[in-house]
Length: 483
Ligand code: NAD
View 1 (cartoon, protein in one colour):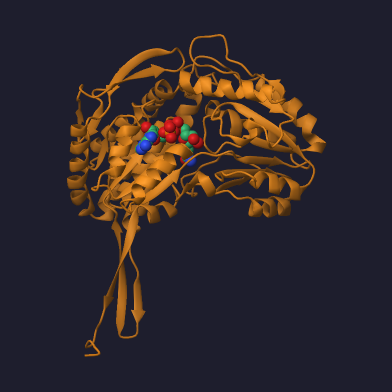
View 2 (view 1 turned 60 degrees about the vertical axis):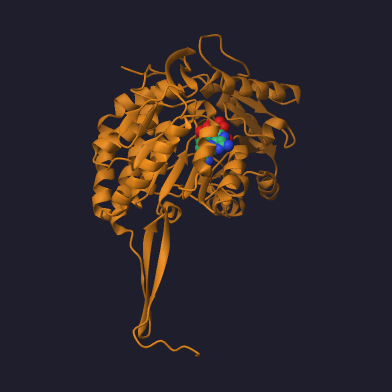
């Protein structure tokens, strides 16, 4: 399989290269080897991408929603047909095990293209009768949208931003994370092959400066970022100075609350999914696991037992269920947190170290007896580090769960249905779970409150973030003016 991309950028329906941009190595996280290289977009490349998006958007918006939808659903089908190839590529880009990538990456991208492709023909306005007069509304595209991605789900993010944007008649310029530049190029290729007009979906590579140049360009009408809170603040501020629309999908430090009456096996399963899937590099992870005192030791013992069943190894081997960190940098950040956990007095139950093998592998790690003031309980780690905290009462745990600047996700495990709904009702979070964790079907809105973000991806909600409503007052009689 050829890993080196045909060229760095995809603009106006074709691959484009400009080797005068800063080189960016593509590193396979499972071995640390350089497997390819792209060049950051130069001002000329950025100019070309925005020009092509501006022109492509006019052609695209002039098509009917049904025609647009048909192209998106065709692209969804093509992605599913090529799932194996795309999943292998995602594994090389991120290091995530094929066992995961073949199940959730390209497939969830296809889900978004299919879902928004299906909605495209139904994006209509309203008729509002006012006696003799009336108002009608038209749902219009925003224009040129910029998507900026994080490195944990490169295919999914390229599609989750692209699908609703395109369904509404916008064009997109997508900048993948510099850590994972390969997958979005494939999405662009497939969309073109499915019939997307040239210039409607462009990909440019680069670091933060390229993202910033796009966000600051007056031709851009909307910015959707998936990234960290510090980046979110900068991008939001830059967008505000031009009054651009924004969607911010940022970080989290989400609570997962397990009551004494929960099914322990399911709660352990939820905690594993919410902390160790994708080696813990998931924004919505439930990294503060509050366990009620009655079942605490039982929970921890069973958790440690099940962690022993993780198959850590070659991500391309289908049996592997736990892979490396995306980069050496991210591995070192997480190692720093593991050290802080030990220094600040948390009880290390499992893992806590780098694994002795090539690549950026860390052991899945669990700390117990974590207190609210410890660094590992306060800051987003973005790695396989679970903090187990204990609690006595429902009231207490709700207050402690909410005592954070973040508000992306929250989960509750209990066999008391009323308690499940009552507690979730009081938690300050955008994407919540009862007796489950981290499900993200395209039909459900996804996004955070507080510092975790603004706007929602997926579901019908996303349409509101990629379109605007024009209202038209129609007078049927004469105009009465005061003079
Ligand atoms: P990051 O904030 O470092 O980078 C995100 C993207 O922003 C990258 O493409 C980067 O090049 C770009 N960027 C950086 N500075 C910029 C600037 N000034 N202007 C424009 N673009 C700029 O994040 P990361 O390390 O790639 O990803 C991890 C973070 O993303 C975590 O905090 C995680 O929680 C968050 N995340 C959130 C979600 C979500 O949906 N809420 C999903 C995945 C990851």
